[in-house]
Length: 445
Image (tube, rainbow, N blue to C red; front, side, top):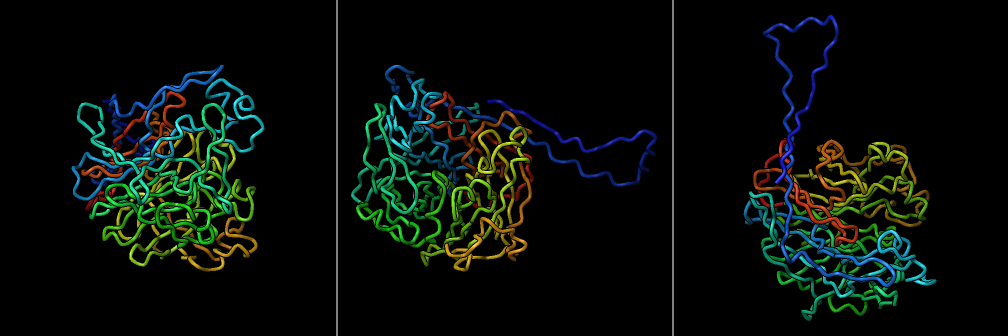
């Protein structure tokens, strides 16, 4: 276990300044932020070794950190996490990852994505953080179709939203699968069921306590792409969400105290009307979903930070920044996790007073210019208010690519990284951050 404490220096001294009288009230001292890291040698996190002809052998792990949640009634140090679609990388990244040029393994296939373990099943994990600086996996549940068969993480046969061609480790084409899920954010209900975000569709899924998918909510007009799925599919999300950029769907999920409402946010602004807009825009869409009604109950705009706010990444394109997690606080306030590949920023956001754009002109693809292209103040759209809570650039001991966030029972923040199944040698790390002055949780979250 590694513990690092950092106090904030707030006093500024001037030459010749007069000392304040003893009776004057001194400024409150900022809390000391403490970061504790936890690692694991649990054998369940070992996946397999995969060798590539003429290239490297990858020692793959199980990446369990694509989302996190502490469920109501669970011990203070026990969390749910979720894995995504399994180890994968694009043909364009092949040479850096496996030492084989992409065209050698992928040929002339356009938009190819390699899945070294294509049969991997996205799964829910229950992990316990221990006082000795480690964590262990208590149990796991694979996501399943309605017949109880585990689903894989391959690509869906999308015709409306953009997609790629899945390939195995030898470069052979794999079939797209309507049952497949790229699982990301997760919450658990008091009845044991789950709600899960999906990056690919994009979509949100309701699953039973045993992991069987009960219903998948997809953008209206894309239902036919899932016609052969072995579970119920409903086109209840705004049709415009099908314009999400490739691999920039839903990576988050939060749950209200009364369990009626879910919140989720798109990783990035939509490619609305085109990919150039997505690359340059910073207006992401945040949704409130009514579970009882099975429909969107609110839609808000979250303004992402410019790359100039990320130290060392000032010259990168705006789409370097993405959103990976939400955690409910109370009322209309949540924590949102915004990040690049190197740095994570966590903000407290407040929806009160923000413009609800659900079902209006900004959800219509015919609106020109689009929400992603306009200046919000000129369009009369007020984004959600945001306040910085944590910048990991101040805490280099926190791992990169943090995608899961929850709260310990004592109110401390739990963060977990997505290790990408170890394709670049990284492994899963859990972090406990104290001293952030967050309101105490009144249930699991």
